Image (cartoon, rainbow, N blue to C red; front, side, top):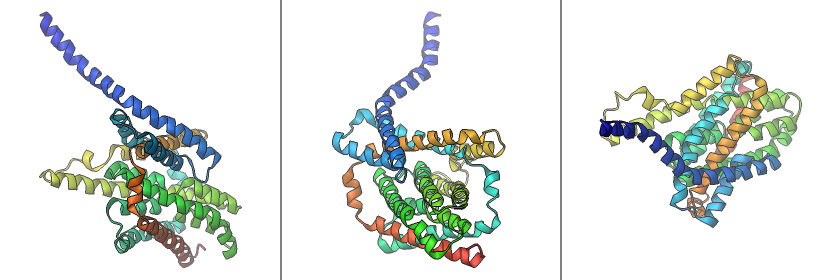
Amino acid sequence: MAPTADRASSTTDAPTASFTDRARDRLPGLAVALLVAGVATAAGIEVPVIGGPVFGIVLGVLVATVLRPGDRLRPGLAFASRPVLQTSIVVLGLTLSLTQIAHVGLTSLPVMLGTLAVALAGAWGLGRLLGVRGDAQLLIGVGTAICGASAIAATQAVIRAKESQVAYAIGTIFTFNVVAVLTFPQLGHLMGLAPHAFGLWAGTAINDTSSVVAAGYAYGGDAGPYSVIVKLTRTLMLIPIVLVLATRVARRDAEAAGEPTRSLPWRTLVPTFLIGFVVASALTSSGLVPEAWHPAITTLGTFLITTALAGIGLSMRLSDVRRAGPRPLLLGAGLWILVGASSLALQSLTGTL
């Protein structure tokens, strides 16, 4: 009987041992990513226009260039780059109140949906013209269309793009966020935009939330709060975009494996983190997540994104970004101009300017 008992005990302990082994393997790389994220977060507080996530990937790349992380760090960096990234999207969902977003009104939806279509169509057309194809084209397009680094992070969690493409996309988005924060308030005053019109322009044409806040509140009046609500509404566009991308990836993987695509289970087509994002938003909308918690939740979610981007930066080499050349940056510039101009044009057409 003793051997049988020993075998049963060994079988029971195996999952625990496996979990412990995985955790031990991941700890060194995850610890380095957390350390870089801590430094990046502090830098982001000092320079909020840039923000922690951008500092995270930049510092990660610089550290990787100097130290060249070895195989011992790879499991932890991979964990930061994917599971931590997915968790950050769920956490940020807790700050989205669907009820509050509904107050934006139907009048602003044509502008938001129109600029989304312009960004995605522009990414396809300009990407072909400039020779920027594949994942880099998609990441820059989605980042410009929706919400910058957060949208790139959610897209990366589904399509599993190369670290160099993620870094270039975030760098491109960051460049034009800084330009927008510095120029949009002055341009808005020159055009004589009302605070709500400027808030809608900033919320649809500037990518990162921190940059929208900086530009909106710099303009004055109700522009700040209104631009934030518009920006949060744009963030919800992640849901259909990620669903479409997840379906494409699942079907592509099934075809590559010679499996039928019609019978794919819904768990394959709908990422778990997206379900968590929707549930988190529903909890906030129902009042179960007090608004007083939102600043702390935003801080946690931003830190998780920073950790994930630090992991991505630590996994890549600066030479990979250099090889991409200037064309992705030109794509980002073209999309930024297209979205900014189309937002004003759609406001004029719909009478919200």
